[in-house]
Length: 69
Image 1 (cartoon, rainbow, N blue to C red):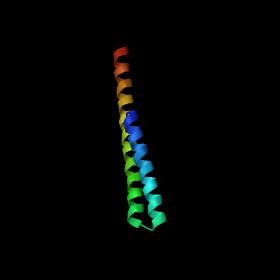
Image 2 (cartoon, helix red, strand yellow):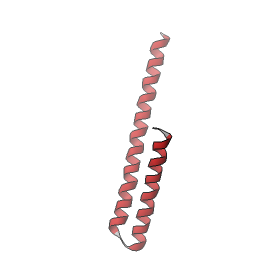
Image 3 (cartoon, rainbow, N blue to C red):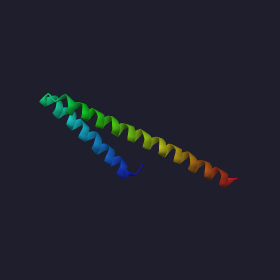
């Protein structure tokens, strides 16, 4: 996952936290729920990026091992 993607996910997570807090303060359950959904979405994107990075690292290691033989 690129640094830009990580920054974007963190911004989405923080925005979600702000929405959730604003919703709670104002008694707006829809806004609070939207904030929680934004946080969950950012978390899923981050997890998917971590899996993608892990697979890419394994592929690179496998290529390196094949070239050493």
